[in-house]
Length: 375
Image 1: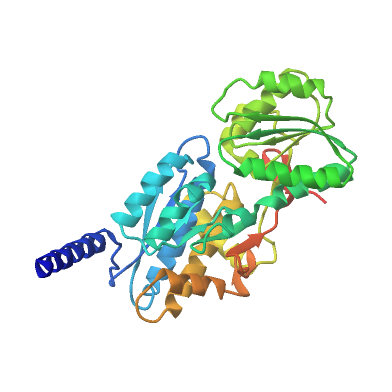
Image 2: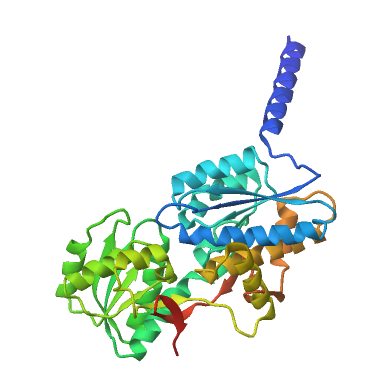
């Protein structure tokens, strides 16, 4: 009887092992697959519409050179419209169906939504759009090579204080935790430098009428209005001016989006915003800009979405080339952390111990619809 039970247990164990093995990602040794999840459509489309061509350029370049150690690279893109629920579905497809070797995710809330599953699936996830301690330190499988989130808020705060605008009203989107993090960085620096937060309003990015929030802002008589959102910030600016709010606007680089500027109806002109642009002295950046224009037919709208994405691919390729034997998440993670002083279009790239490679943003002004750096 005991022998029969033992045999049955062994059979059950074997069945379980087989079932589990079928569910795991298997490596196709003939090809490297990279997945990308981000917005191609929707109100945040500007974040992905240039990043994808940038990544595509990197893939085309490596394949023209014969691939990685003789193996071609394939890019698989999923549009999540910058919505967390869509990120999860896209992740499941890329990992379980396409069986990617690594994954780039540009939707901030989406990274956190798949974090635990990525650990279980043993998948490396890299954010090429946002980078901060909350993100990089969330998991050994999560990395970021992008502009530093906190530097957005800090640079705005420093510029306002420098120009004597010590009473700030803040409006921020609740789409995910990103804008709240920017808001906190702004507030901490602003108050530490002697500024005062006279109003703070959280808004739903899907709304079309922000006047209730803006009337509260108007009543606080701010010397500067900080708007932290996506394309909807253009509509907020329009409604603010229509209500008689004359305080200068401060915001994020998304204000360079044609959609945001169109909805602002001209009122975005003169806005100050945190932004990043490549150094004019960076040869690699100049070469990439030329390639991008040849491919897309225009310069990048948001270089902070293109250059880091392109560099992320270059770093990944370099890591893959150094891996001996099977490609595993541990080997990729180790390779990323060992990446130091790598020259890219964004400058010299070095990953910190938490898995983040951070790029600082600074203040620009919207002049004739285009970003102009200010001192």
